[in-house]
Amino acid sequence: MNIPKAFSREHVEANSGREHQPFREFLRSGEPYRSMLEHNPWLQPPDLSQPLAFGVGRYWDTTTARAHPFWRDYDLPLATQDIHRLRRDFVQWGYCLIQDGLSPSQCDAFLCRLHEQAEGERLAGVQQDTPYGQYVNTLINKGPMFAGCITQDPEYVQAGPLIEQLIHDTLGPGWICHSFLANGADPGGYPQGLHIDQGPLAPWLTEQAPALVNTMYIPQAVNDRNGGTLLIPGSHNKLIAAGSGGKVGKLPPTINLEADAGTIMIFDGRLLHGTGANRTDRRRFVATMSNVKPWMRTQENWVISTAPDVLANASPKLLHRLGLQALTYGSTVEGFGLSARGRVGDPWGAIRQFRDAIDQGSYERVRMLSPESSQQDLNRPYTVAQAMTAAKKAPLTEPGS
Ligand SMILES: [Fe+2]
Image 1 (cartoon, protein in one colour):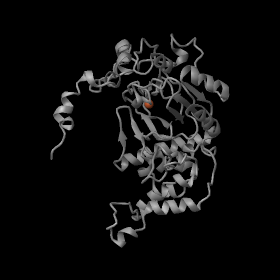
Image 2 (tube, protein in one colour):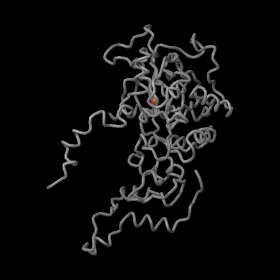
Image 3 (cartoon, protein in one colour):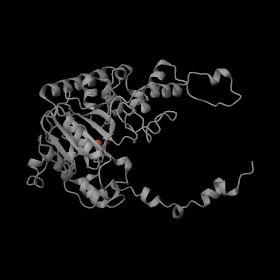
Image 4 (cartoon, rainbow, N blue to C red):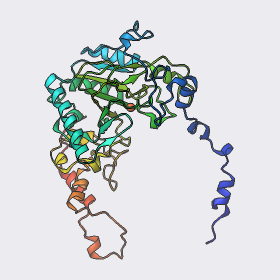
């Protein structure tokens, strides 16, 4: 083959030195973590091959805001049901605490299911251990309350409408669920490295608003003894001030989150946080459901992992939250979903039918076709054609989202 020299690997490589790559410096800056660790060496994660050291001023060796000499006089978030206070706390401190977001009975059922599931997964040999504790992933398949939380159904999470509004405020309409898993902090476990949940976007920081918002379900009391989440209150503002690719200066100290059972914490995807070290003899569970813009790739690939019976019973709202509602910039299947706006129930973005076809072993993808194709190939029951036919017949069932 006579390929032009300009396309040869040698020519491309010879002309692709660092000085030629326009975005290299930004993309490889390692920010905000590089400067964060440089200016705050006490934030270096622990050496997992060594016992965890206390008394040496590291980020996990802290206490609650109330007891902290640096933080105790600050007006940090306290659990409340006042939506205005929640919004103010979220903007100022990067997190807010919803008091009794789960009712006592919702809370008990939630926690009991997590413990049962964790034990069952261990017995089945499918437990997911981390240096911090046992995780329980993909909660949607593991109890009806979890699907209920994903749609903020008040039957399972009494603060549902309030949570939903606060996320609408922040991510804009149409947001979807990124993942929903339970984080165990086990006795003697290590603390997690402090991180921001929208870290994969780094070095972009989305200075004007977060691109990810997390909701943490706290089904048991947490504190400085049992691995209460480590936070640096207001750290999102320090990162925002540094800007995308900018350098972060000295940061204030961490606290352990202190909250009663039933509290729900909503936090900004740019807030520095991590699981705390549990110094009690009992596992501590919280569960995190993060949420992202609808075109973003989700952490949990719900389209594959959601169980068929869960999908069969899923409301249009749940399908949307799971990313099974395609829109122009996300999750189209063979082009089906292009031009859809991602509204709940929009038949032009209903991709569940493709997953159903996979489950039934009947998915027919459009492959190479030409005027010479056989009649058999031209007449196959193509799933995308069936989807378009169904969309043409179906009315828009549910407006907005
Ligand atoms: Fe996190």
